[in-house]
Image (cartoon, rainbow, N blue to C red; front, side, top):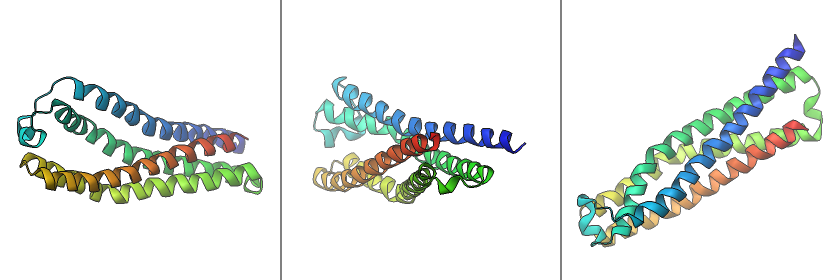
Length: 183
């Protein structure tokens, strides 16, 4: 019976860790497509006309942000939940195996999972201020206050760079956990 629970824990661990990678990569791929395609379509967003000053590429980037916002928010929470599931499954595997934590690959997997869960948790903690910065940018842009919108966008872009680094850390940690968990 102990062997069956160990196999079930291993399957759960690998599936959850792989889905973390998917939940991080998929919105990134979607963003590449949206931010490359929408600015070329000549979109018109009446509420942002004054901000965009007739530049359809600017309107396309604003539209891409609207299209992707919920996807990123959902996958931020999803990747955190999956990271916790992968961590819990790994703990179950380690307990079932007895001395598994004494092996170097298991130690590496443990550290990778801690980094993964920590980075995911940090992303969730920062999400409200990230969303607030985006809302501030959009509010100024709707009102046609270009200078204020550009300042707010610069703050948002800085937060976006941090969020991107956190996602990359999560992705790398999930891959390292998978690789070392398989050893």
